[in-house]
Structures are given as C-alpha cells and as structure tokens.
Image (cartoon, rainbow, N blue to C red; front, side, top):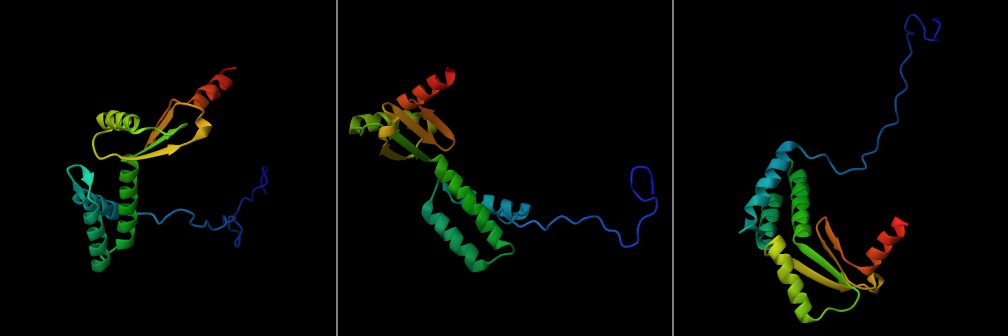
Amino acid sequence: MTRNGWPNKPIANWRPEQPAPRRNTHAVKTSKQARRDAKELFRACRVNGLLDEPKVLQVVQQVIAAKPRGYFAILNHFQRLVKLDLDRRTARVESAVPLDEPQQASIRTNLARRYGDGLVFAFTQNPGLIGGLRVQIASDVFDGSVAARLAALETSF
C-alpha cells in the first residue's frame, strides 16, 4: 500500500465501479445521413417558401412504402422540421377582450409585413392579461399586456 491508500500493484480481480446503465430518455439519435435525407425531403415539400401539406403527406407515404435504410430516423427528423416550420408560421395573439375584425386585420397586416406571408393566426381571449396584447410567433414573444408591465414593475422594486 502507498501513502494515499492505493495499492502499488493492480489487484487481479479489481475492476473500477461500473456506473449504472443509462436509460435512453431521449429520442433515437439521428444519423447525419438521416438528417440530410430529411432536409432534402423537407426542401422538396416547399413551394414558394411555404410548406405544401399535400406534398408532405405524399413524401411520408412514399418513404413508408419504400422503407429505405434508417427510414424511421428520417421520418422522425422530417417530422421535427415540419413542426418547427409550422411553429414559425403560427401567430398566437392573446388579448384581454375580444378583438373586432378591423383590429384583427390590422394585426394580420403588421405581422405579415414583419414575418412575410403565410402566417396562420390564432386569436384568443385571456382576461388575465388585464389589457393589451400578447403575440407569440415561434420563439418571438411580444408582450404588451398590463399584466406583464405590472410584473416588470413588481420585480423592479
């Protein structure tokens, strides 16, 4: 034995402690080739910069029918790309009171000017906002509500 407690010679049956096997809590790791294939399919489904839903369905059916190597990983990544694109093209507008048609049209034109055509709008009423609007497009959030201003004021004290 040495001074720090470790043996000078290795012990014949000694093995370092094995960590507990890790469970796979995440999705299947996608290979680079599967990601490339999914991106290529995704680009093929775009028409004038927008996703074409019939083409998406057709591509999925063709991949399932052909069953190329790693098709499950290709479809998983393709699904992820489609979901991200849909999130990018969905505007969720919350207001404390119901918005009339001219107000909704004004919001539509202003957001279309900023984000381009092809946005899908979802107008909802949320009395918890007290007043103002909250707009979410993908990860962009514009919160002009009274509730957000009160929360910011509260944290400043």
